[in-house]
Image (cartoon, rainbow, N blue to C red; front, side):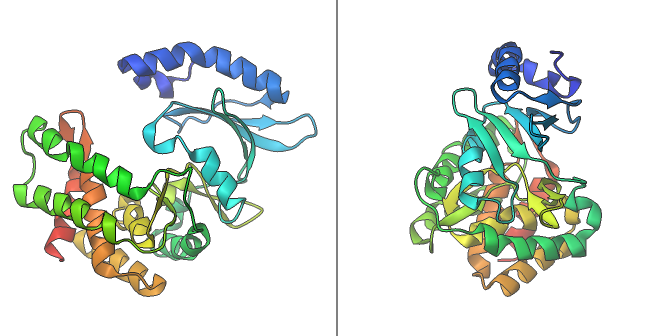
Length: 288
């Protein structure tokens, strides 16, 4: 098989190169295991090889071979837990290679194309369906928060202090105070943005590519509040926070603090930061 150009950036790291070296063998094993006929790879996938597939009985599917990543390592377990409720179905999973055979969403257009108001309404409707009680084997939000807290200041220094210390301290304070006082633990998705929800036939919209954790509901709105695809301004970010909390009955202060902390933790790329993430964190800090 030929490695798609969209995956070439993974070759910049030793781990990425090692995975790319094994990818042809993983691909061949998956095709043989499930007797697949395959189409061209999807070009939008940058951390996985994903392509339309057809099973011997004619079922349309998607084969996904994902680069091993901390945040997506329990994708198969999350899809099983949801069992098609608001999310695409897991048709098969090879735990040895982590190859996934997934329900295909047709026509598959992303919710981000629908416009901010409609997308927010759809996401607000999906969230309660996705918030199923959850425990092991899912990573706990408290564990992930401790990991973020453990690297935040070091990366801030490495990036040459790209934002005020007061913002860093706000994130660290949230990560210290929030985990031990959480409400009911449900399955939350760290990356539930409008680009990861596709138009489908079985349901109007289905969630793809979950990055699951077991944590409280207030954390679950974080990727939507900061979602630049829904509009990137102080007014739009705070509108999303207020609307989600009001319609879903959430504690606004906890949702605000979780979003600030995770957005800042996810803002680092090597020795640089994502300016849009810092913007969102600063707007939320000012809105306390």
